[in-house]
Image 1 (spheres, helix red, strand yellow):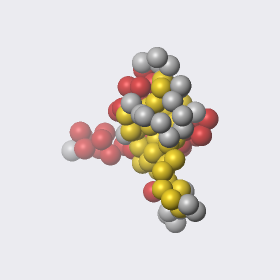
Image 2 (cartoon, one colour):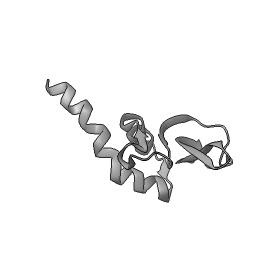
Image 3 (cartoon, one colour):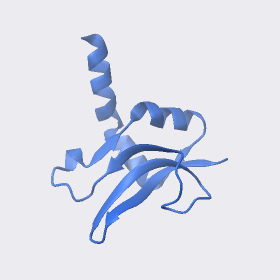
Length: 93
């Protein structure tokens, strides 16, 4: 099974909300997912808090061959370090 990490659209009209999910590439955009890996809310005023990620699970899916969509790759590149650091700081304390 070829797995993709992409966004699933949620919310209502004029107020979209997206979940970043691991999904079989044959499923439709809003189809059945394997696992939820984060969220993206484009309507939040604070741009730094628009994206939430679960880095451990994203790294797992990438290690077993999942490929991220172009938009999700941008989020991973920009925000992945932000979500890894709190876990690293908690271990050193």
